[in-house]
Image 1 (tube, rainbow, N blue to C red):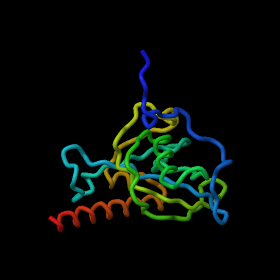
Image 2: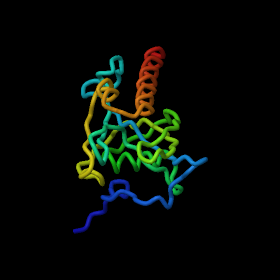
Image 3: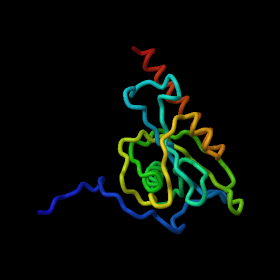
Image 4: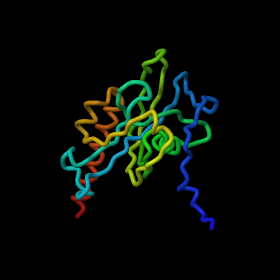
Length: 178
């Protein structure tokens, strides 16, 4: 017997490669990424303390550095589609991509390449057992303080701070409206 699997449930087990579709703007390579987050079990609405919020960090392909998933934004996808794809490929999670946290310009560690990066929050709804880069990356859930400490890219630390502030503000607004 054959069963049909919904298209959105299918995960490609390989990452996109190549730079043919890569976007550049004024000499800066365009990259997008997500900060995958979830609330600890038992408290799905509070962000009163950073310890109640967990974020997912991943290891670099080469070395032990930790960061949030990000990669090239390609010409055949929107920023949010690219951010979701990169997060699924590198961290093996899917969820709801929320409004942009910001845009940063930075130099890459290798060859001094120039980048323009966009980061989005991703409220995780599914953590996959099998994902494209599982053999070359480790993923670890951490509280905000731990993630800020291990993440070595300053622009990603700033994105994390913006996420935490946004979540705190949304909780305060919701409490005020009650």
